[in-house]
Image (cartoon, rainbow, N blue to C red):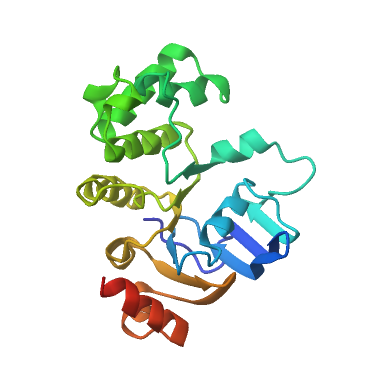
Length: 252
């Protein structure tokens, strides 16, 4: 993990971000920053704004007001090239979003050739190496329907890594998986945490948050209620809402 100087510029900065869906106030005056190389877990009850927050970072959602920067670039500036931004800010979704008509190797190759214009052979070599990295090199020529949910999610992670992002956003990457499939995905995520990526994870996997994150951010009703290091958050949460959430999630 990168050790930062105190004056290092954050990789992600959100200032006074507001987001509405019709009359529903999804994000309320969000101030949030992530240092380079930091691993941040965002947690909270369903509907608290967690996924909306990270989807705004790579402009999968439009904000109503406020300011967001990634690596010094204004995400919502008129001249921002959205595909270039998203190649820098990778995202792993809850439901994998693999192309069913492409092989696993092709799924990891296609973004490299179409967005980054990398030579196909070079892209395939890189894709194979990344599939090996996530333990699925032997599945390179299979199609997604031949894989388990956990394997599909590991392919989705390899596909994201192929774009060489500076930031990786995970939107509840294990919530659609059977319990026995979760461990393999979390192990891959833990390995990434040691490789200097800046990572923001929306998850209910509190064991991962305790073991891997540098900071835990708790949201409720569109607001950041509290944020602290994992040890403090899990042993001495400062808000009644966080205490209630932890009591419910850790006793189930």
